[in-house]
Length: 258
Image (cartoon, rainbow, N blue to C red; front, side, top):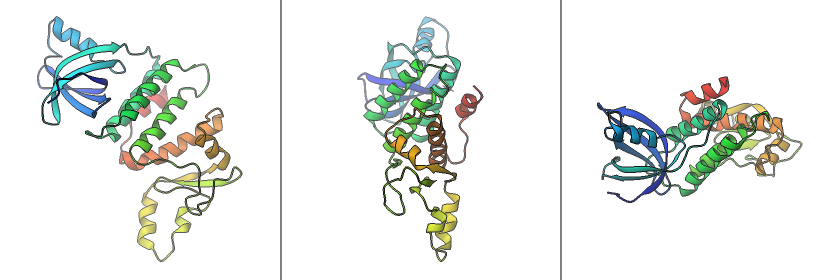
């Protein structure tokens, strides 16, 4: 049971029974939590006030109770209003929420991830949309940090097969499970290990080669060049694919259409 206030962001909500909703919250201290909010879809001032409070991207202070995985709301208030997003920024922010819903499981407490999400939302609200690709930078930073938090950090420093440092003039394959190598991972597996080779072909190996100087730029989180941003996007698509289970992200479709 928990009656203390928790710093949260609302990731998603869905109808529950006649007048209630279930909200998925990203909390600072307890990770992802699902909470039943009774009467939110009902009539009256109290329901209307609660609906206006439970909005995505606003910083919330929430108290709940319950011993099961599904909690009951006790109170909620806004501590910082949601940023004002234009359409492009909004779709990008919704993409972050969907990523967390799909990849971040209940009960995984990650204080750093909460801070990274808050920072990404702020960055998205401040990007200069007149600069091409500016909104992609907060997305890529958060994606890489999310994977690292979940134990799947992308290493831009070394060749995964040889152990040698990444060379700026080299061209590299990327495999979601192993990392980067100048040699194809399929070629690195001996022919006698047919089952392993078949298994890795199912895994996500990026077909396009990535320039070594792009990897070194990403190691320094330098997204200033358009070609580096493009490489980062390709790498992240391949890195996320195994964790998404072949199911497309709805917000990604919205974002790509702009």
